[in-house]
Length: 77
Image (cartoon, rainbow, N blue to C red):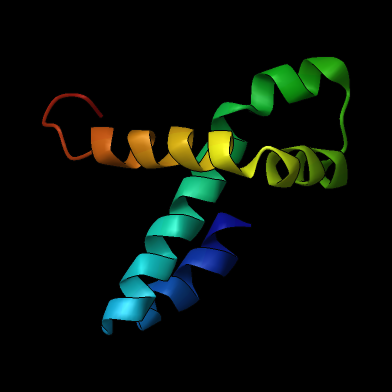
């Protein structure tokens, strides 16, 4: 799923709007990835996971953007 979404974002990243879009998509996918274990323990399907992350979009976006910014720190990733 990530590869299918991020490849077009990579192509769009050559313009400034595409760079912002790529950062937002990466933040969304990062939050889905890091919430995978709690979601799996509760037995949620992928549709339920996406619905929960969309419902809590501000928290997921904040968490995902903090994760993306943390990856810029050497030795953190």
